[in-house]
Image (cartoon, rainbow, N blue to C red; front, side):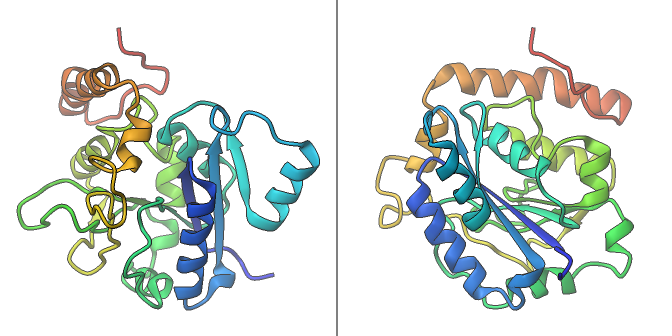
Length: 243
């Protein structure tokens, strides 16, 4: 059996679309045998599944059902099931312009010792100019980095500031490998022909609680995470809860 070098974690609330994205990315891979692909539906969206059907899903399609109702929880649940040396995220809006050979292109841009090195790999998402932004909107990391952090997506957030936390921490700890100019995996939620709802359903579905979630995430990063990282150079404790 070929060792799995890449674990793809794909949180979704739209299973048919997620399966379409999966098909597109695996078809474009140079060597799909090195890839394991986990689609993670939240249990609140899919509350009842026949156990036999669920098991068939898992065996044939790599589908899991995660407790909770946020993309952060779904990503972390999927990562906990993964075995690949690289963990990466895909999303429902990433159906356009999938580059042929994206898998070997990614691996080929890593240093020779990448399997044993802590790397927060910055991949471009097409929404932030790498020359004018210190934000990585697409999270990819090596297994040693995941093992030390104890999470894939910063678990203290609902959604909005998780990528900012990832970006800021990896800069401060000097684990960032910035490939945003070389690798661009486009997010298309801003395009009305891809996702016609205002701001895109991708964002609306995870921000259903509106200001409550936004204020929570904003306070978590700016009032607690950033000052903590600046003062100690370390991450927030895993059991941190916003007062």
